Amino acid sequence: MLPAKISSVQIPKHRDMKSFTKEIWFTTKKTFELINITREIEALLKESGIKEGLCLVNAMHITASVFINDDESGLHHDFQVWLEKLAPHEPVASYRHNTAEINADAHMKRQIMGREVVVAVTGGKLHFGPWEQIFYGEFDGQRRKRVLVKIIGE
Amino acid sequence: MLPAKISSVQIPKHRDMKSFTKEIWFTTKKTFELINITREIEALLKESGIKEGLCLVNAMHITASVFINDDESGLHHDFQVWLEKLAPHEPVASYRHNTAEINADAHMKRQIMGREVVVAVTGGKLHFGPWEQIFYGEFDGQRRKRVLVKIIGE
Amino acid sequence: MLPAKISSVQIPKHRDMKSFTKEIWFTTKKTFELINITREIEALLKESGIKEGLCLVNAMHITASVFINDDESGLHHDFQVWLEKLAPHEPVASYRHNTAEINADAHMKRQIMGREVVVAVTGGKLHFGPWEQIFYGEFDGQRRKRVLVKIIGE
Image 1 (spheres, rainbow over the protein chains, first blue to last red):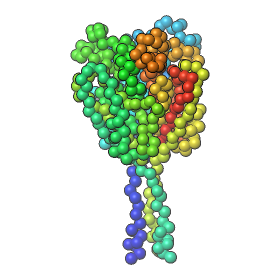
Image 2 (spheres, rainbow over the protein chains, first blue to last red):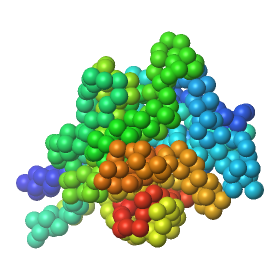
Image 3 (cartoon, chains in turn purple, green, red):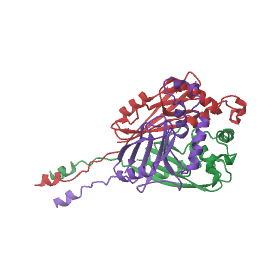
Image 4 (cartoon, one colour):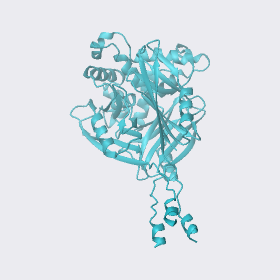
């Protein structure tokens, strides 16, 4: 009788919140580069074991972006031309920020392209539409920079 | 004495993490449309039963946006004129992306307006300021596209 | 023997989801201001007790932004000049929104700079790169406005 009583103690099943954190390093060869990092993020999601939740991917530097768009080289060329038109590097002396540095334009390009994306995680996968790909956008490259991946869920 | 001992087993109260996922389909009549989807998102939040957490709403296509701004028709006209000025559709041949398609400008308009919003959920409601409304922004319409709603919390 | 049995009841350790919500009020003296709010957000994160999760910080008004960039006064001047070029306040009559108000440009500046940031929380800290700072960007100031902080995690 007694063991029965003990076994009747109900332990509720809980869906624990998990979190996963990883930094990825990049060193670009050029000042301006758009790098597809979708495969890397998918691998980290798998490593995390998280099935349902949210995946934050953000640039850790303020002259770089993480954004979602198309993986098409013509479009990437167009992005570069367009960003240069909206936030031109030259004339360098037109920016007050450029007394110590010459990357004011890169801070602006980053605002247009955005710092981060938040992607839904469903059934252990990045929940994407047909053409969505994650890019690291570098606008002041040729030095070491990081992207942060933070996944929370269960 | 024994039952007292058994009843003294402490089962901690837990606040489980829940998640809710839904895709919403749109087919716009025009190339450019801004559609208020606040009521739809509120209905899905209610359906989810989630009281505290975060609600991600994102375009699943890369020539569309989800953003938060004012529901005022004059402003929406101004947004269209402004986006056309910053990322003009014409001349189509000025974009390398447009060898197969003619929507390079829509990919750029989407970057300015953003892919997604993350909205706080407090007391079972979208935690909004006085004029915040969620919009689906279509920049290359007249075909079927999706918005994803992912809510996590408890 | 019996107490041993009772003590063998396994209570799994759970990592509960917690949430924390706070609104911060601002009244700017000027129409255009960029205010560093990093210290305020750090203090709220500490108050929340959350160690791992996501921290959403968003403007609750549609002519203001929350964004992450550099705390450098030259760059802030450059941002103001640049935003005025991309979304000029004058001529006021060029915007249809401005029949009742004269802040259409502020709604556009906000789209470029963004509504919100989502910051990873790791080990009880905002998980930042070396120069990341959170700013409240006001583009139609001189009145009371709010920023929302929502932290979820454990």
